[in-house]
Image 1 (tube, rainbow, N blue to C red):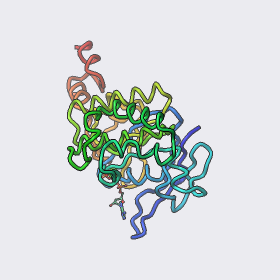
Image 2 (image 1 turned 45 degrees about the vertical axis):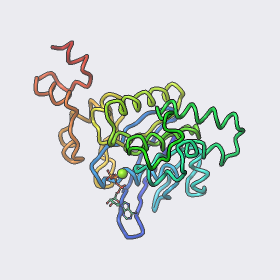
Image 3 (image 1 turned 135 degrees about the vertical axis):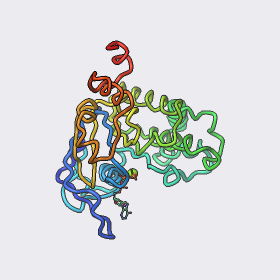
Image 4 (image 1 turned 180 degrees about the vertical axis):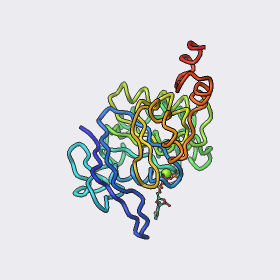
Length: 262
Ligand SMILES: Nc1ncnc2c1ncn2[C@@H]1O[C@H](COP(=O)(O)OP(=O)(O)OP(=O)(O)O)[C@@H](O)[C@H]1O
Ligand SMILES: [Mg+2]
């Protein structure tokens, strides 16, 4: 079971070629980070993975099913996508209605609706906002509302588009816990982020995009050791990695490892 991109190109109606010859396999249960500068084509690539976009050329295959032959609704049953901007996703008047929407739309029984909503709200630490209008809460919390809403569908693949943007330490910690939980549950999480500390702390596989292409795919240690990749994608090493390199200790990803070496 996997998400496969085979020679995928995507061109927007205005002629912008946003993705060029993407080739990628993500196995079910695998956790990956997608990084790269603004406009690199990350959001376009993940929208291809959940059927919001169909490739201009090439094929996207989800668990053996070609997205070309299916509706976005059919594909989004397998791949959940949390929008980069929560305002593009959230449309209900209370957080509770938003988090219960998927279950009600899919006519689950009342007990199941409640149980999924409570579970997702707890995982995203938004229980105290359930009766509030989503437009009255801060951006960072709203992002967790949009994550909780998608979680209730319990898809085998979950895409988070820049969940770390605007998060404080507690928010980033909540995201790390969520990634851990999803891994235990056998679910894939594909996360776009600009936060390289978050990448080094939470991921074993990193896909780097630049100018619509995938330019690298490897472990954080491999990626952060390649100056040419970092400069082409305009990404910065995590501080811990920068410091350990300057100290002549190579690319160290974890603070405990650096402390032990010192
Ligand atoms: N609806 C659209 N119509 C035309 N061009 C678009 C559209 N959406 C995105 N693009 C262009 O496609 C390219 C890739 O955009 P995309 O949003 O996929 O990048 P990204 O890596 O997600 O960037 P960011 O980090 O800013 O979110 C950019 O040149 C962007 O301007
Ligand atoms: Mg984007």
